[in-house]
Amino acid sequence: MNSTNRGLNRLLIVATGLLLLIVGAAAALGAWLPGAKDTWTPISEAVNTQVGSWLQQTPFPGTDFSWLMIAVVAVLLIGIILLLAFTLRQGQGRTGTIVHDRASKAGPTVVDVSVARDALSDSLGERDEFIATSVSAYEVRGTPALKVSASCRRGVSPRDAADLVERDLHTLDALLGRELPVLLQLTGGFRAQTQKPTRLQ
Image (cartoon, rainbow, N blue to C red; front, side, top):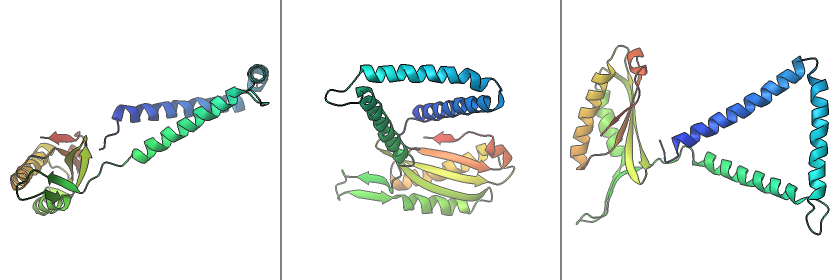
């Protein structure tokens, strides 16, 4: 739950998986098929010859190597930097503040996520429908949002569990004086596991 584009995440995973699948399939075919080596050898020799010809035809001024090598290294470096930036971005977005009101007449008002965590955990912890609950906060497009995860007992209806959490969220909204976006994730019982996460307004 962060600002990373979900479609970009999936595209990168699919592309990486397809690349690994193709490489693995080629290696397996080369090892298992008797004629694969004889077929691959002339192809690899032709490719090596063509690449060598390209490198000789594109020398970098004042050097004895091709500018194509510089371009390849630059592309690889850019790719590594982008992958590092993408990896470091994962898991970010958490915040410890759910309300930061600078327009208050009495001065800035800051409400920590622990307020919501304690209020919801105490209230939901008294319910027999839930085994465990957790509350965290994320900043999505500059707006604080809560993520409430609840593990339900087997046989508990996800609709009933969502109603119980929503009722406590309304109480929290009244306490804070504003409504917070909430992502509710129900897990545990079989009926709860078949449900998708529910976003409450």
